[in-house]
Image (cartoon, rainbow, N blue to C red; front, side, top):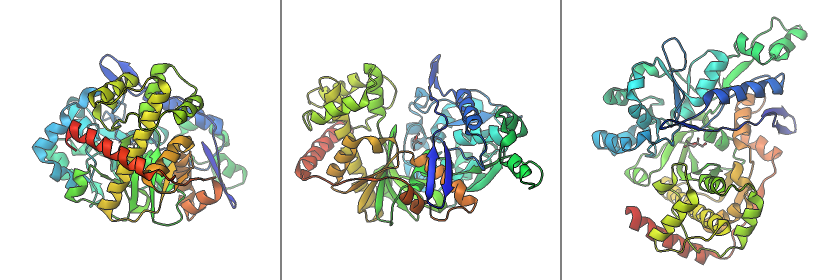
Length: 479
Ligand code: LRH
């Protein structure tokens, strides 16, 4: 994406889109990181001259570099099964309360901390660990750093000190030397390397433009450490007008929560499995990871279906609340035959199995809306933060059926958009670092259409459905 900031607002332009296809090789599920980097280079080539660059990507995953700075193997996908049982071992050894007290991080089996312990042998050969956006930034600039919003998803970041959790690393035998210096969003992350400039044909980039204007010798294009965790960028671009909002950053995952000035590290918060991830300007993204549209994406893959609008139209006509699932049940985490897993879940919980795609999609969307309702109620209860409206940003903002269900289930007005919130947050942190913007949210409000969904009048049915689902959850996990 490129973004152009002008007096009237910001304009995004998609210059290049490329797939992110995980690859299973042997028994391991990898990211194809070189294909992703190639996609970045192709995008930069197509974008033409730009004034700055920022990279954001998903959280928790990393690449290891050898002491000479060369990649030591493909990053492994967080959905890979190598972490099975690791979180349970570590929490038994260190204590869940001690871990939460330091990192304030939700307990998810794939947090970086557990991946590293599953990957221990590789750590001894490694010189540096870089999170995915930091790795791409390193290849562009040659400068290794750890951007803080993404560092906060590792489980090895001390959320109160705002530093790496050195004592925890020592206790777990994770080499401290792997972790590069932290840098906050908005900090410089280096200049494009000359080799990269040549590769993308960047003779006409900012430096050369400066040249043409007689502004001195050609310099590399600056790369800026934006809020490199995609969710942090998306939350930065939530078009809220005041503090009393919740958000659903809706894509493969649904990140549901509120923005706070400080973390909530109480026992109740840990028990509710809420996370305190770092946001822009030292804010806390207090949220729960809800398994999001991933379940529907995997269903579409299993059905070989691509016509989402027709499927959603059929789902809108299907019978309400026929069957409900807990999207956060661990059976829905790995890739695979999701329709079969949904049917098995329904059978296990004494519900009818959805018959066909429309009923299955309805079941998934209602279940997601109910998971949002629960996460929002927990966020409000645990933080004491007042919420008057829910902002849905990301790809899920396009899903009118899910947005309406979210309004109905939460009883709150939902404001949907922008779809490209992460890209906007990324670009506007750069623009702000360059002094072009002061209030990111105000600029997004001025630039992007927002669709309002008011809650309907069927609160009682949603209440009853929430009660039913809570019963299934308690029967399955005692929670
Ligand atoms: C969303 C996301 C989310 C993480 C998950 C691994 O893309 O970054 O915030 O928890 O991916």
